[in-house]
Image (cartoon, rainbow, N blue to C red; front, side, top):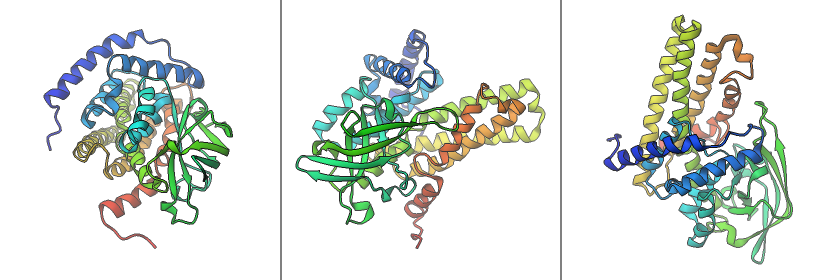
Length: 377
């Protein structure tokens, strides 16, 4: 497989680099990490700049390889990440583009691309995390609306979101995977209560969401009733397959910075540390090639990443933890100073073997869907 840039991709890369060089110096000061209303305004402002320059649609209108070039170049240039809008741009938006009706695409995709709306993800529940199909949030059909009652947890940016991609159980008597429906729920609806959660790293980008008789129009259902598990697999394929592209580039940049820091503070003299840095460099190079392979496969199969995303997510989440464990070795005693670079990143890296499907779940997917091993009993 030829993984080098095509002439079209090279032209796009050059044009994007030139635009980034002009646009980034015009950005306002970045808000405090704890100021989520300010963070929302900053992230959506950046999205509007991308939209006005003609780059916002790259997430859905361009080929998967051009999307990867876009994420690679923006990360290399130090551009803002999608931030508070990551669910809309990288999860819900692509799912609606793939599974929504023409009316739904026209309704929800342009505001996401223009930087006007933020989405959050209402999947996990207190008793339905890794075993997502055991979710118990109920949706009762009442004419042209669903009446939703239940709760969600670890809902990213719920406190500043306009919409939620919500999984609900619409048929409690059906087998677990067949009674689930995917809804788009307005966060301003009556009966929605949001309670922020503070993480180990001190941030509050997650929240609990409580739903008390929330009425959601049937027109907000993406896919058929009780077919939400299949739609969810589309969402998760984007989350595991292409949403981490920019983060792989960021990790490779951190690795180079670690090597420079180690040379400066004398820790480079440790041969075990040098071997570890070298192995991580090979690891992230391999992950980058795997990402290229995954998006090439997605392009050949209609734009939706396949189960190869689980291979990537499984290895990437562990490699990221190893990277920041190595950063602690390079920093030495400074690894206990929360104001030092990479310290808070090390704390947040602990969540990556849980977020977007635990490593145990990814191993099961790889075993059953790629290796063809029998299901456990």
